[in-house]
Amino acid sequence: MFKPVKTPCVGICSTGIGDSVCRGCKRFAHEVIDWNAYSHEQRVIIEQRLAGFLVQVVSRYLEITDLTALKVQLELQRVRYRDDRDPYCWVFDLLRAGASQIQAPEHYGLRVLVAADLAQIKSDIDADYYALSVAYYDAYIAPGLAIPAS
Image 1 (cartoon, rainbow, N blue to C red):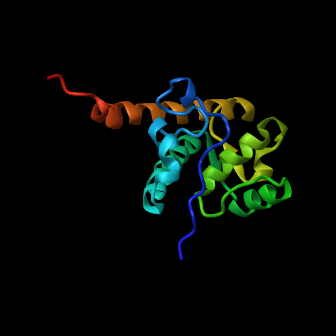
Image 2: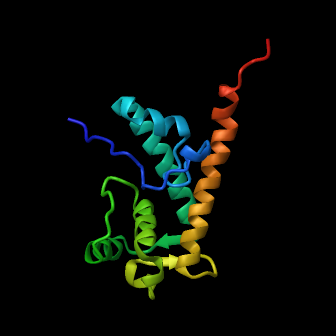
């Protein structure tokens, strides 16, 4: 039996105002619209792309040095995270839940790789994650949507 793929929606959708890529969940507009009609396999493909992008971006800013400490803190702080995702996705869940509240990242099993506070890092990760999704859309999806000239 397979585990259903939950919607990546975070409740901040910008596709309704014309964005081709949602600023909240980073899915493409057609993926947001068609999500409920997608098969399990299609949802998995979307989830894998999003997780891959997020891992790539988060790992540029933070390194997980102690996975056990990270997991303990996620549980202690009651941060919702998906155990089946890459731990770097958990880091983003943690930052979204309260980056400004974390005073000692090392207690969370994290090492900061850039000179910035965690609130700024969260903002930068979100911006880079969105930019990566837009770049992928522009390079691989949008060209296929163009209507050929007659």
